Image (cartoon, rainbow, N blue to C red; front, side, top):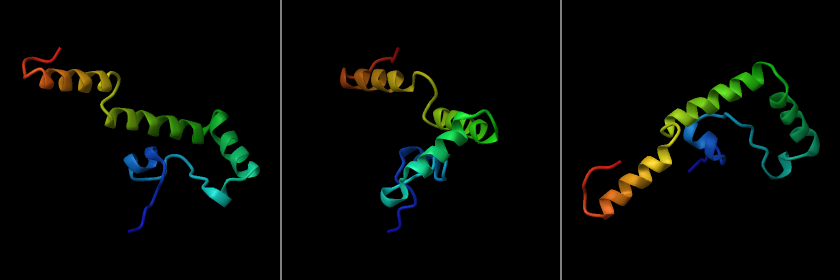
Length: 83
């Protein structure tokens, strides 16, 4: 079985959103280069922020965790209407 990604972001999006610098690929130079790409205003940063917003929507948007927790709580209480 081939694993394409190890980053949770990349796994969920099923494409490379964040650069994965794994083991020997992680060097000060490579990390610095990646941080410079996303820290500075420009197309790389804009694309990353757009991709992360898309990820957030895929995960249910703001409040998704609270809604799921509430639904689970209601279910454990024997049904009823979620808040």
